[in-house]
Length: 284
Image (cartoon, rainbow, N blue to C red; front, side):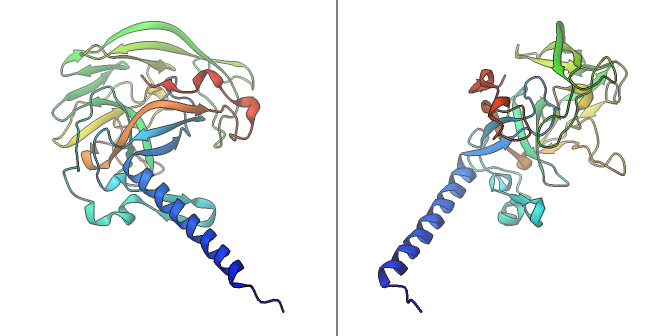
């Protein structure tokens, strides 16, 4: 039997130590500064496409329990949420170095029931009165300005790792057929504008009751208005899925500022599906 020399043992120990240090540093970086985020669904089209990769700026609004990392590997049953790591901070109304989100920001937050990370656009601040009437946002009794901007077009087919298929104004079409939706430029009272999509008038969510955003909470909507589960839906609106309702200040993780990389394929390894025109693109 060959007995490892002290030199070999020392080399193995140093390698293990280096890996541990790297993991600790990565954890600190992710907790304090930026969190990676892949776009898994089409709820924020055309602002964000399935397969866009970005870093969430955690410094934008300060830190709460939601700033702590989470580890989810469904294939082996690992599900450790931010509230497991930072349980002691959950329930605190304040944030360390807290900053106030601005209406129109694209924000990542934790689902208040399930703990998954969601990304939507902030529409309502604490105290706001919001209603959706015929697909239009009424903010504090005034319609947001809108302007038609042609059509958003994409190929029909499975998209991303989840293999979701887009919804189209033209109804059911075959793979590689042209899927179209109306593009609309929506403008907030402060002048910030962004693109929203409308699949068809009269869809669920096009008409709602009046929402009054409670103190310490926020109201979010996806830009792909007819294909987004957001604050228009209560936290449990049917037996199969849950909306997000109002989001607490403490559940906000950070702001999405810039797309770093984008892949239209099932995996980032499919280099022929990379979208080079979206690298380092600023998120409006």
